[in-house]
Length: 303
Image 1 (cartoon, rainbow, N blue to C red):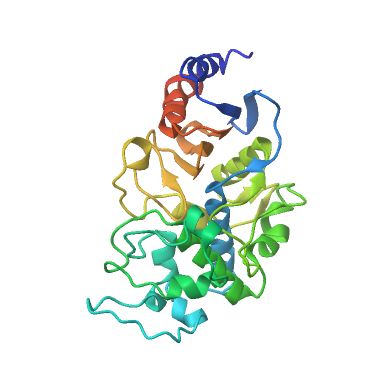
Image 2 (spheres, helix red, strand yellow):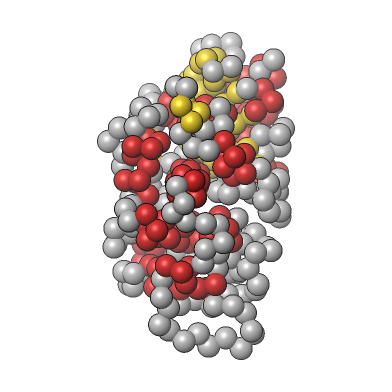
């Protein structure tokens, strides 16, 4: 075991945190890595959302979509909404509302269990049929359904799935081939989850973010978009590293960092002030425990 990760490994073992893999890049170089049982592709859960954000930035740059576009611009809604509270219908939600997860739902649509059991195969139709609980644009509620609708909007705007759109623009330039990304019953890239990557590939994504969208001397995604997506766009009310705010499909962290974040401890943590990337794959419910070990044991070695 290398000296750089010894404290982290000792901590996760002592606290019985089930981490599969951790890699630390510093100044563009591999500082250290550790794997409990090798590094292979694993499902990245909501880390997938941050890749969907990259597709938005590219589509905006190409003039194919705008942040003020609404769901109604792409999906006609033929269901009259009975709404006695004078709240707008879902068709008035903007792409920006969805990116910030401020769509106005108290109970987020299309979460994992609902996706698995939903009889309606047209998830867009299902989402569009739901009434809002409050005015959109102001209050954050974490919603995988919002991200799925971003993916659906993009597919309608660009004429291909988010996965296919990103293959030549992001995945292939980053050296990620034969990408697997789960879809809805009607073939829309899930967007919110279901992307399979190795931890090494995840660390490559983090380095690309640290370089503000630049890779091998080519600007893959506009740096203005990377900056906007990875800074706080809305307040969050969670505890610890979930209370630092949210960008466009990225979480803000303590220590002036930000992260792509997936259930059970998939993390791509970018620390611009340290010129560092920390990528982690886990199967662990105590995600804050993993982040605490990062701040306490890895951050101090990033001199």
